Structure formats: structure tokens, C-alpha cells
Image 1: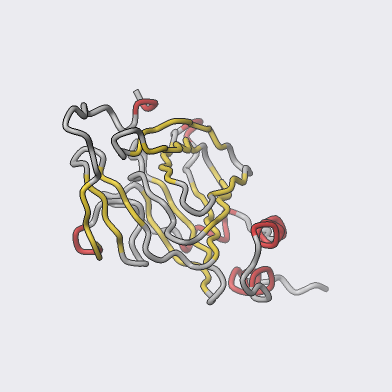
Image 2: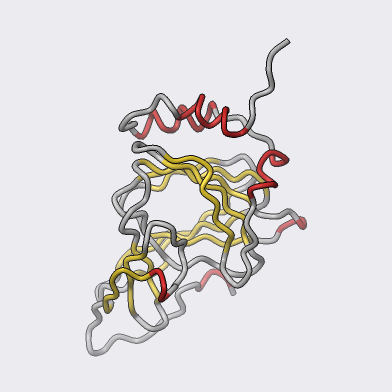
Length: 203
């Protein structure tokens, strides 16, 4: 009779052998990682006043795996992933993924949106700025798994209302948290810049 592996054993089995994985190697490991939502429930953090609860499940020098439990009607701040690339898997619920591009004033503007459904896996390239939100469809909670290589460091988070950005600590999520700020900077704009809604597709 085959032994039923614990979540930590599954993580080690799928990701423990990876050292400086390529995009394709990490995707192959993500595809191999088979986990049920019931196994993740004990690790879900309450979002409280934030866009999501964030829990580190696995970390090595090569990569990290996190599970995120999303609040209702609260998008994350636009952010990059430092020097990391990653894959995101939607375990439950429906997510709106918003991709940003700097406009002529240097301000990240939402350029494309994608709806991600349960079971979908999408790529987050190094340097990409994006935001996510729980769409609250069919009363399903949004739970997502995030796989980053190497572990995220020097992530930038953007506050598009105050036109500022910040580099946050490694244990901070995609929201503006003064206690987690390592460095703050202004977003460069021209004198004639006019503010536009950072989340135009959520109306």
C-alpha cells in the first residue's frame, strides 16, 4: 500500500531537487505538484484588512512556494516580483489578473486583463507589473499557489493614488505597508499628468 504523503513531503518531492530552475523546469514541477484544497486549508491566513492572507509553504535557495487566501472585492497593489519569475496556479475561485505598462509619464497603467479560472496556471515573468483580485464568482473562495524562482527579494509595490512606489521586505505582500518598506520613491510624472483610475476594469 502506497504511503500518503503529507503536504511538506509533496513539496520536497516536487521541488527539493531543483537548483536554479529554468522557466520550463519550474513549470514541470508545478504541473507535477498535486494538492487538494483540503490540504491547504490548515495553512490559509486570514486576509484581515489586506487583499489576501499570505503563507510560506516551502523555501529553498532556489525557489519558494506560497499559498494565498484572497479577500472579497479588494485588489492587490500593482507590483513586480523583484528579480524572480514565477508561476501562479488558481486552486479555487476566479481571479482577475491585471497587467500594467508604464505610460509616457512613467506611471504604471493597466493595459490588459485576464480572468483566471480554477485549475489555470499562468506565468509571471521577471519585471512584469501586475495586480490580482478575487472576482467572487459562484461563491467560491479564491485560493492561489505561487511558485517563484529564486525566492522573491526587493519586490516593488506601487501606490497609484499617491504616485509613489516602494521596495518592501521579503515577508511583505502586494500592499502598501509602511512597517515593511525598505525604500520609498516617487513615480516620475510630467507636469501635465492627469490621474486616471488604477483599476479601470473593476467598475
